[in-house]
Length: 228
Image (cartoon, rainbow, N blue to C red):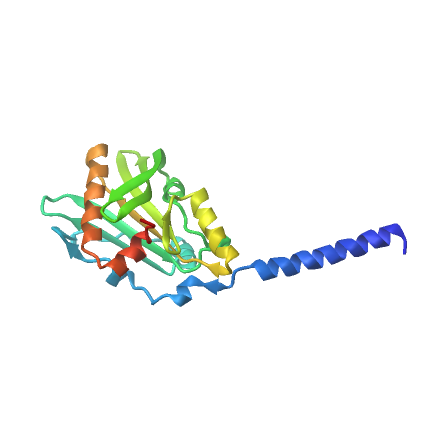
């Protein structure tokens, strides 16, 4: 057998082995299929601790092309505007995806806002202190014309809240190495028309009030399970 033929044969064996190994290591078991079916409308309380849904706000209609993309990425989405007894409003949204593989990973708000013509002037990673543990989160400031929108958001992958970006990817990989495809959730809170620092403080108050009104199981679905 001449040398070129030997090399071709070896390369062929290597390609077959690589393909078989890739197939064997591709996670196939979805965590979402092992969980109780979730309904975001039921998961998130409609009123709590002085907050209620502001029915005067008409939800924006998403264009068909954008809706098709959302339907591909997420199994469920929920968007509400809440108002408290002082007349302060908070925009709240949740997106749940049962398949957090490489192809269907949660889309970060900073990317989505840029696609909508906003300039993201602030992107700060940190932790939001809650009575249930420190929640990895990000604060953004999205600006378009006269519209300034301070944003606080977090993501969960499987049973854990993680900082979006590399930590999110590492959590996906951990599940993948165990043969599982995790589910995930993106939770976003934002406000308009108030001072930036005041807005972030209002976000924290809203989040704390919401979490304290939820049962432990429902709360864990929204913010993950803490080690402490």
